[in-house]
Image (cartoon, rainbow, N blue to C red; front, side, top):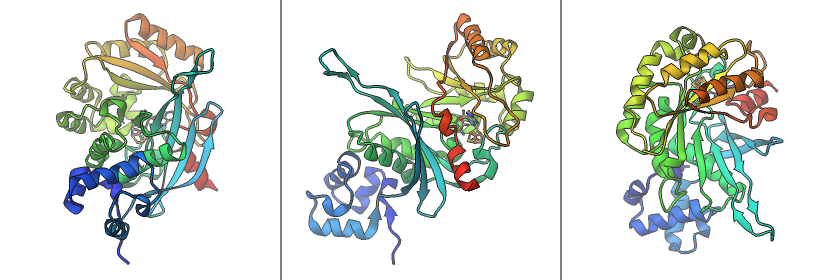
Length: 356
Ligand code: SAH
Ligand code: SF4
């Protein structure tokens, strides 16, 4: 039997070459991404023979949910199986609850962020990260990344017009899969599709300077987050071997050339690990490093996992670290430890399932 193609892999102009004319492509996009159709046969405004032809050539179910876990804070972590049997994770993070006025009328909707994987595994080998353990299995195709978001929106009954934010902070290094991730950014932003503007998408990278420049040249409007985690090359190389290829200076150079919206900033993620990089002198160095860059810092508390030598820092130290940065004028937040009880840091649910 002929292998079906994943229709989520295609931009409208690519589909137009296969399915003419464009208005049919738009209708198909709307059925899939906005009306959450289950199959091609239910796409009632398409001619019957086109529906049949589509079903013979395409599918739009690249991921199947194997397990999900809800945290006390409301975040839900999904373990997905791809069509070749490999597994990845995604997380739905409720950011704000729905607000009601005194009469019970809604004044604002709930807000969500969806965290997606970009690869099965990762080859960067960061010493604190569980995804690094098994190495890289393969890149995800654009439609497999899009599929994670579509599945989560659809199965949580999040209406299509309710905008969600997307962060490429699940498993994998998105810039090691730049071709497919940049395509994902474009597919997600289609008006007839999920309509998630690139400004609502944040790509997090361990600092592949060459690819940061390449992404910058594409001028997609996507937001950038750098996983910095250390302020000197010696320590950073210890934590993140990729630092041998692209050191801190190279990353800063690439960041400076990255196009960002006037009102936006580059996010620097800084994973606080107890006794390793959480001293005030590190915070001072960080201030110096970010001098002249429109940056905001997101402090993350290390999420411990079995077999890791590292420990979670205490919150008091993290707050001191934060205060030092804020006092020097660097915008800085401590990322709420969403999903700590369900191990929501990247790679942790998959790992647990595989131990069994
Ligand atoms: N590869 C990309 C994106 C995926 S990792 C990157 O490294 O940026 C997303 C974030 O989770 C990174 O900032 C990473 O450093 C962080 N992370 C990895 N392991 C973690 C852990 N055990 N606890 C907390 N954050 C972790
Ligand atoms: Fe890969 Fe990011 Fe994990 Fe490092 S932190 S191993 S780059 S997924």
